[in-house]
Image (cartoon, rainbow, N blue to C red):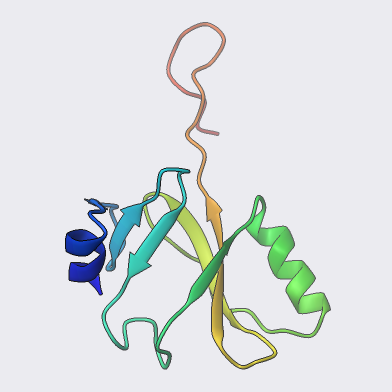
Length: 111
């Protein structure tokens, strides 16, 4: 699949620290990842949904009776996996924001 996306669709992979999959960034800023078979556990695929607040999204799923996996992260994102009503594996993904420089022009506020 990686070769197909790279060679046939002419997409360029991007390296992200902490990601063990081949990631391709789409023109709108979203990403498409290809992991090795079994790299996601017992599944043949995973579909991820981008959310603004991962903690709140986990609470909504749990309130609806769904269990969620542990939060993992890489250099760009925080995410967790869960099984949908169809018993397929899905993930919710929150993009990390970079700390903004403080108003005095100094170093970013990393509190």
